[in-house]
Amino acid sequence: MKTNRRDFLKAAAGSVATAGALTLSPSYALASDEGAPFAKDTMVKFYDSTVCIGCQACVVACYETNFLNRADNLNKPKEERNFIENNDVIPVLADEDKFNEKAPWIRIEGLDYRLRTIIRKYVDENEQSHFIKQNCMHCKKPGCVSACPVSALQKDKDDGVVTYDPNRCIGCRYCQMACPFNIPAFEWHRANPKITKCDMCRSTINPKTNDFDIDEQGNATYKDNPNKGTACTKVCPTGAVLYGRREDMLALAHDRIQKSKEKGENKYYEDTARGESVLGEKIYGGTGELVIAAVDFRKLDFPVDKIGDRATAYKSEGIQHTIYKYGIAPIALFTALSIVVRRNVKKHHEHEED
Image: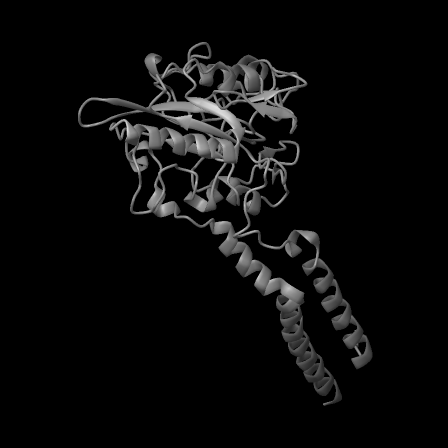
């Protein structure tokens, strides 16, 4: 089949135009929000480790709300799901290590597909116990949202909640690899696996709303429905975990630290090297989970030095957007391919003439 110069140039121009249109699509044209403040109504959870007694009422409430008692079919008990029951997929555990859906206590070592939040225990050199609550950090610039190729994970621009749509999820696990806190849990047991992570109960009991007040304890109280809020914050008996506006929760955290200093207790750990006394204020560019504790955050399984204070998504998206800006990369690629094709066509015609 012979290709004349006019047809060749038309095809090359069409390819470049198509590449340019794809490049300027909304998914690639989003501007970076680095340096911008958090939205005014950003909602967060505030956890004070020194107040936590390790009762794990929050774990049970989360499990019941988001796994056992949901009205949809996203998460169902074991007997109602299509499990792959063999020793190669599900490891055989000792009886004392098996998951007890009625009392998932301290023996749980990490987040898995059944749990969106857990309480873990650290015992220091003085045999003192310290607890830490682990769940999605709802980062200002979530690596999971940036990495997801199908937009199954999205960050609400108004309240900052990182939501998850399992109907879009393809189980690629990019979110797992992109999350610096190692939060998304994968359903290894399923033939069509998804992930599990905290969405601040958005999909169950805590629909989006900005119509609330802050009570004396710092919790958000809703005017239209006092039962709204996250499952974990609603059941905590000591006020160790609270839910409210980020600016209010951050002020509350600093107030507790300051009052502790004034009393001469100094019971809260402060990362003076990094200038962060409230975990989540700076780490990874800021998060929707604020934590204060009596011990170094590193001992509570937060590798703060490795994570740093800048979200990696800024760097990855910066590189991507620079390369694809104005269609530079596709145009350069198709130009190079056009030159190669044109040379080959020319050689082919010369060979035919010979």
